[in-house]
Image (cartoon, rainbow, N blue to C red; front, top):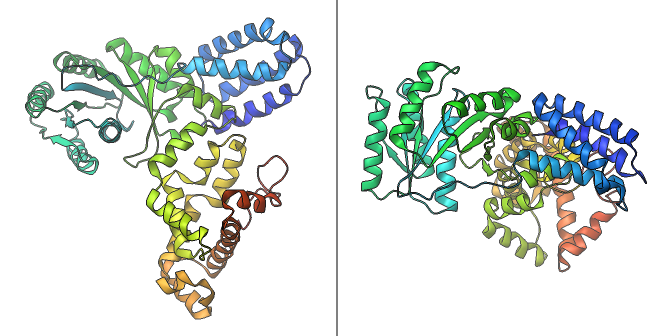
Length: 461
């Protein structure tokens, strides 16, 4: 998300931060570029206008003129205003209610509402250690009930059965009674989506809200609809007392206009971002971290949390011990590292969260994206364990068997072997001296100040 906006803003602010002093003239030029960047990112026009006015007011005041580094001060102002635009800080779910705390999920059809119910249920179960029940009040789409049942089983949470012959309000009443009886902490009510906002839909959702009396009423919206997402959320907010918004499909939205518009248009906080189809693809929304990522400053805290949550620590320690002893880094180890990286969202996601590496992420996505990871894993899976442990034994006939079995080419296999040898060299430098030796070994291959080597690729890619 935000690739387009990040590219434009980074160029604009880079030109400004090197200036010894800021004048009204060069600030106006920069603000014009920032305005254009926001509009191209599909941020709502009123939001853009207020944002530019606020930045201009602060930039032309004493805040910048007294600074020893006016350009850096201007960058700090833009970051601060972006953060404020999105809500300043993360707002957690409010679960302070007599159990079960009811969470009502609303939204248009196709926004990913049912999947988001399962993602949130899993998140609360694993992070907050809550007992969870989910129920579908969508009696108009028979597949919706079955879909939620399947996802509930995957998340390992309680599913309350419902039927298309029932009335939605009756389903909700029965689910609340059952959740109380079973001492459930949180009950999620998945409501019916519609293709558009209409009077009948709003009447039904209002009645469900009255019956459920939820502690949280969340609006799930597809971020790829841009500023329309904010306008739709506003219409729902006028009909229901929304407590927050969840943006879905944020991994497919290069513009990010919805995230910058929703808070100001609705007055309601964005609480979570949905990423991908996997059930664990959910992140709490942190405006300060996202503002840093938009400006190419990375998001180290989220990166650390990703590592803590998604890296198999047992495998990582096993590999570290193996490398420390000087044992050979083989293709089976390489495969496990690819799996770990893919679990964390791929190389582009990792680089996007590293300070100064946002621009590299797009290049890396092309040369080392998920498709390449899948291809490399397919190649390794087609090898015997003996071949994985000793790639030097791969002769012509073995290579033909491996590529035919994995649906790849000899060139793909040769590239994998070359990349693996590059990794072996890096791992050898870590023996005994740890990370210090590894970084020293990479030093000659990285340009001054870090970033990508010449040609825009990591060694071996």
